[in-house]
Image (spheres, rainbow, N blue to C red):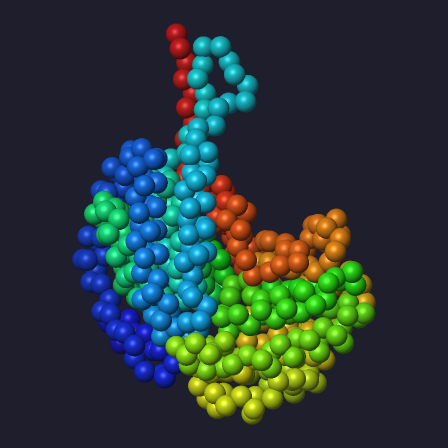
Length: 463
């Protein structure tokens, strides 16, 4: 049966939270036509005026924070005590607006010649489709929306069904900021409709954040259409605690990096390698901190760990934990003592696993949930080998007091970002990118503007 509605089931109680009908094919075609017409004019709007509109959209979005925070909790389970995403949204959007002029300016030929004007200009690609995920519904989407609009493109947003209200919030903000009609549009689409848009070449660029299987589906749909793609897919991000690390700092930050948002972070820490000199203390400290989490209703201010976004996600993590234990791993958190985890809902107790190895899926395949495996290592060489033993490569974190060692180790890691003494953070001045099955392309930094524009060369001869 063809999909007719997009439905969000709240992980809080398993009930339907919101339902929206998918668009008709004629409505989709009309939206794309309107986007092209709006973009043809927008590309000629001075950059300062574009910036004012984009920042106006940002301000309108931030003004909704009081309503948005409980909406996020209801849709995907993040506790309200953490206050939403808009501090990061502001940081990223304002930075991308600030660097737009420098990033988009013409590049003169580096060997001037008398009688010639030679340069490369950056032109907008046209219409950009953003396919956004549910885990950080605002932070992930703004990475492309802000620079795409600044570069002179129109933007079509297709948000995840789990966070369908986030797309509507973006539309409200665009409308309140007075963006030209058709320039930014939130579309309610089925997977088949998204595939048709890509397959028929109806947009010029697509940025997708989601699973590896989803990224492959996007690539298949766009094949032969010459639509450019930016793909941020799965991750299994590692951390390494060296012998010279501040172990107490590492414990505090890595536990947070593994369990914040119930582990549903693209760059969350999913496996930790600890030098043998710190191993016992690290495991002890991690278990102590994890035992302090309060699993419960995310609308309750006392809750520090909400449910996963959907029961099927929690079930996957349960399976990984059970497989690890069956293969000899030790589970240190007694789920029976966590009242909210009854074993068959989206509520899942956090877990710390030791005696793990890379034969276990919890150390190889993306968990995207509140579980982490900790392994003892003897030296840098062993840690590097294990960190690279993964089909993914988004970020890697090194805890050390030696910045030269961190950079040297980082040079050998197969990853898009290398952190030292921090994790689970996007710096908008740096490219957000991945290797291997984590995807391709880059968002944020000046490199984002290269993905959202095309070069146009001018070779002008005076006679």
